Image: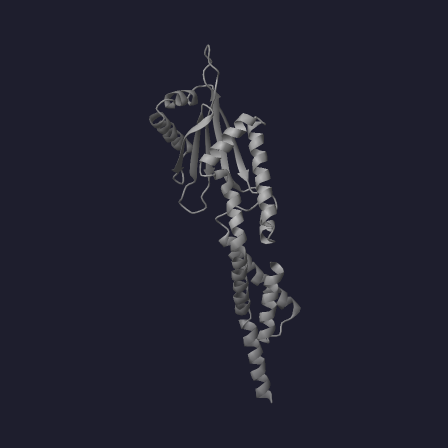
Length: 262
C-alpha cells in the first residue's frame, strides 16, 4: 500500500514540472503518506485493530443447582458479551444468554448508556428470565443470586500484527489469527472445562453469533479495502499538490526575475 501511494504522489510531482531538492521531495512524500494513513485510520476507527484493543468482553456467572436426594446437579450460567461502542456518547451493547437444564432458555440484547454500570443490565436480564421462563425462571434466578455463584471475565482482543495483515491483503490469515486467539482466551477463562466452554460458545451462537462478529467485520474489509486505498491515494495526491504551492510560486517568481533581467 505504501509503495503504491508514494508512486502516485511521485507521478503527480513529475507531471507538475516543479523541481525539488531531495530533502524537499522526501518531506512532501512523507507528509502525503501521513495524510493517506490518517484517512484509512479514520475509516477503520469503528473496528478495534490496534494490538491488545478489546473487541468483546465475555463474562460468565455460573453455579450448580442445589444438591438434592434423587436428583443430578445441573450447571446454571448467565453469559454476557459486551461489545464496546466507538461513537461518542453511545454506550456498549450487552448480549446475555441464560443457560439452564443443558440449553439456553433465554437471550436478550441491551443497549447500555455511555456510563451505565453492567449490574443494571444484569438485573434487567434476571427479572426478564424470572417473568418469561415460567417453569424454570425462578429456579434459575435463585441459583444466580446464591452465594455459591462464581464469576469469570475475559477480554477478547485484537492480535499482534492484525492491521499489517489487513493492509497487506492477508485477510484469511488475519481471520484465522483472530479466531485462534479468541478461542484460546475462552479456553483459559474456562480453565479447559469443556462443559463451560460449550455453554459460552452456545450462548454466543444464540446471541446473534456475537463471537463471530469481529472476524466477520474483518472479512468485510476485504471488499472495502481496495476502494479505501484508492481514496487514500487521492487524498495523498491532493495533499502533495497543496504542499507544492509555495514551490510553484517560487519557481514563477524566479522565472519573472529572469525575464526582467533579460
